[in-house]
Length: 288
Length: 329
Image 1: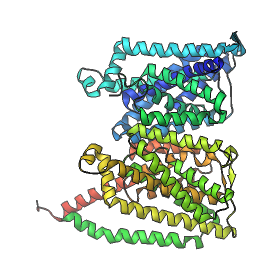
Image 2: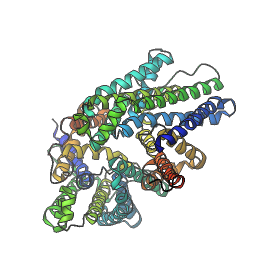
Image 3: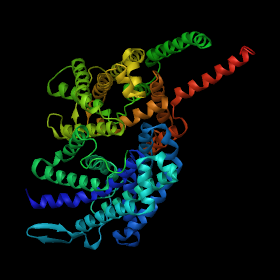
Image 4: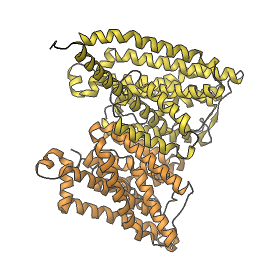
């Protein structure tokens, strides 16, 4: 098997992994399949685009801005809408998050039109060549940034008090409440955190994909596959799932047919769901 | 005592209203223009899709978010059989119905074992996978789309054909829902929705019931897709496998009231008429308004119009009882 294909897949897979982390976290902690994640991702990409276009800010430096804005938006949406719908069960949550997705996506369409835009910093063309394998710097940087962010989030969840509170809430909301954790606040925090992470993923993605209001929709389906592959709630699982999806896609495109790339990943999704619904990494702390 | 008396008194009224609605809709095409005939035809189609989805979502409690796959399958089966194999419409429609039901039946055994989110995501995955395959395979015309033979006869006849076709399909799907709701299958499904383990223990063959409900839902959706394909005479994978088809049907079910017989129909009429009258001219914000409506429904009308109606009549009955029989307790 061609090394270049594997490398391409791995570099792309890192981004997929980061994009899926927020979705996976919300599913694991709050038991919500958040279909609005696609819109948050798009918004993150637009934030990077506009900061780069209007003020020439380096795309990597826009990450904190994306994170902050989406954290705020996530908090607003959780505390005003999601919180009220929680008691109506998962079907309603599925539908309401899809409604939010439509609303946000349409708002971006109205505000910024359906034009395809791209973020092209000066270094976007360069790359290094090792033994015939071509690695663009930007893809490598994105991969490293994605892994770093997932790593930071993992440390946050495992080593800090708030992180432990999130995990405790995921395990058992009632028990967490009994030991004094304000689970309502933890829910809002988890949701905002997830929105911030997927927003940063969007910022990174804007450097290699064209940005349009539909960007998130295309990634949403990949997020499903990655999350299901890795097992929801599991951060290492999301990274592993991302890598597997990236490699599978690159492999299908090079050796089977480019037109079947998406079909193969969706079939993979359904097959994994049927045979191993807990994901490859199994159940983690979350999602009791 | 009082409840049954109320039911007896209200029963004929609802039948009268229903019959009046059917008669009005049946003779309406002779009094309205082509535009409104088309609007009503799409309206019937939406109601059919919502009613079919209701069987799975409302009664069995399974969030089939990708139920639109059967719409696309029905549409493409009809298109391929008519253009590539020269079938006429009705055999092609019946084949579409059977294919959709068979696919649901075969996929149902493994996929309906999944619960909650897993099932929802699996159906989305199936929808997307089938769309990608249809786009890739040559016989379907791929991403460029496929043209069906035109309906023989003039445009008026054509309009009437599809109007009555969808109308009859709607009546059939409502009748099927009514039958299921009052049959062993319906009680089984509701038991599964409330407590799957308990249903299993009580002797409900849960897997079979769920698979049957999904297959019936798929069959109805497949016929709707088939009729729609012949009506539009041009298909593209992105159109007929659009996830929005299922989402709209979902909204109609929730708006009208899940697990009620007429709820989805009412929801479909409400949403479609509203969209046609108010925001259809603003195509740019069409999706956003739908999103807003979704959010508003989930926040303020979680049990749907039928749920609201039930609450209101219950309250009214209670108030009435209190007034008419003082001191009886």
